[in-house]
Length: 234
Image 1 (cartoon, rainbow, N blue to C red):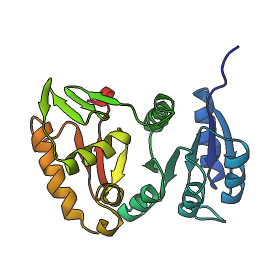
Image 2 (image 1 turned 180 degrees about the horizontal axis):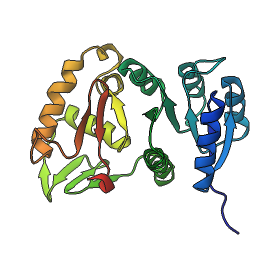
Image 3 (image 1 turned 45 degrees about the vertical axis):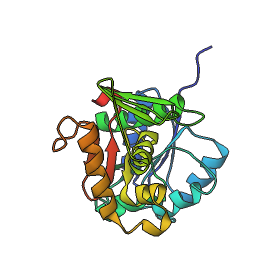
């Protein structure tokens, strides 16, 4: 018996865009539940148990940021925001609230499918948590043993450097905001100390990257945070 394709929940109030996006997704063999309001979406997220949520922020009843916050109180449902809001503050807030990724309208179908596949792949690949060994090109990270190798040569990291790198590994391929990294690595009282990140990211790049000025693995998302490239992207 053929396994069911992933069920995608789409919450989008624009009827034309909702129909277009739902049709595009169905043509890629996804099952799609397309809804107009945040209230309907929250009910469906609990009752239908979708595999992934595509969420617009500008909904008629509940702002998308609030939907993310409510969902994250009880669910780890993967969330990709699809919104016309393109300010750094909107993107950062959505990611800090718990969204996994963010696409600004207009976007290409190829970009959307790439993001969906990457997020679904991450969920399937690590159903019980992050992998013990992360490999991308010449970079190898053994999380359990706390060891890092570049071109088979072990690289010594300080405890803070390793915690920072580990947090990026747990979200490999996806942007992690400055606030999220500061809170996870240094604690909630350090979320405004962004200079810590610049210093330690610079140190990490000098130890890991062959050309720290043009990083291959540790990438900057300007004004938002950092992203660790996965193996297939390197």
